Amino acid sequence: MICSCSRHYLGDPLDHKSIQGNKKFAISYELVGWGLEDDKIHASEVLSTLHKSGEFAEVKSAFRYPLENRIQIILQSSQRIKIFFGEQSEPVSRNLERNPTKMIFTFVNRVLLIRTFFIVPFFQKEKTSITFRHWKENRIVKDYTYSLDNYIVIGWVPLLFRPFDDHKEIESIYAKATEKFISDFYGDNL
Image (tube, rainbow, N blue to C red; front, top):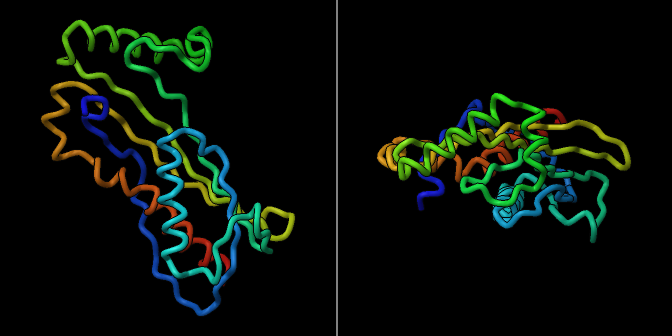
């Protein structure tokens, strides 16, 4: 699909250590900020990784089964700019006031993309982070935040570089961030 020609991951590798210890926690989880359709797919990947890891005695929804250790899984992502001048979720003037250079570059880049029939590529940075907030009873113990920033490059030229991009790594980045959280969580709590 031309809407996601080439993707490049900008963050550090999310390597995790193996967990050593026999103590297993029972956790309940709560999802915050996962409203879009794509986000729901990624949320299921996060929850699947939590369940399949085998590192927790129980993993249950906080709404049905409030446990002593609760994890809020918070997705924070920047507004995505629509390629074809579609309706924005906030006024264009607000983006122009915040960062005029970026907005002008985006506008010129978008016009060049359309005028050259996708030969000049369109660049879009997706700033995304996932925070696992650990609550014990009713107090915050610690936040574990992982950056998932990446660049999307759209056009015919980036399509040629598709075999060399980070597409496969980005598809599994939510699972890697969850594995890193599990490793960090047990590193702090053993």
